[in-house]
Amino acid sequence: MDHPDLAAMIGSRICHDLISPIGAIGNGMELLTMSGSQLGPEIALISESVSNANARIRFFRIAFGSAKRGQTVARSEILSTLSDMTVGSRLSLRWKVAGDRDRVDVKCAFLALQCMESALPYGGEVTVDADGDGWTIAADAARTMINPECWALLDGSGDASALVPAQVQFALLPRELARDGRRAHVKRSETRISISY
Image (cartoon, rainbow, N blue to C red; front, side, top):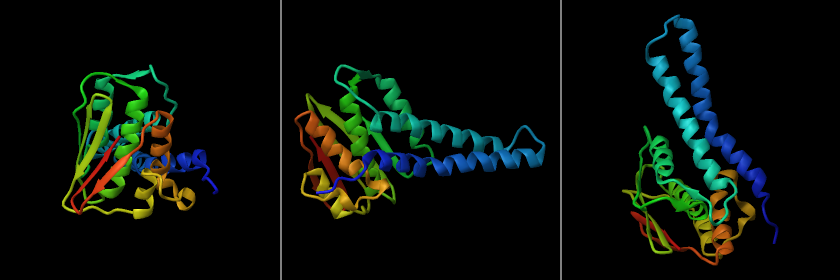
């Protein structure tokens, strides 16, 4: 079986997700220059775009970056990243996990959050919880949009060769879990999805 070039897909995914906020920064700067004003809605546009781009970069650094057992991520950093990412979004994220956490665990949770995000184009509420070594990422929404081929990858029954960059998290999550001797279990209905491991 051919395996996709995950590194290239990650680069494409990062570029894809950052292009909109970066474009908005450029638009805000253009408005600022044309108006000659130091205050106004253009400043808010720039500020919001910079914040969103910064949050995405912080999120991607954990989700797609190197992680080893023994490295920790502060709870305050996790909460700040998730809060900044959802400003103006239809998606609500609740991190119910107490304390600082191992970077490997946070990486897996962030990859699972991206899987959830792809299934919730109309918004919804996602909760991340941990009980001992077990984790559950659950989403509730009025409507979900599931790509069965992608979600099949999480339990090992799918084929990653047809993935596009926006779906790379579906190939990475099971790989990261397997390195740690774990496996994802998915439950789905029309209004609820959960990933546990």
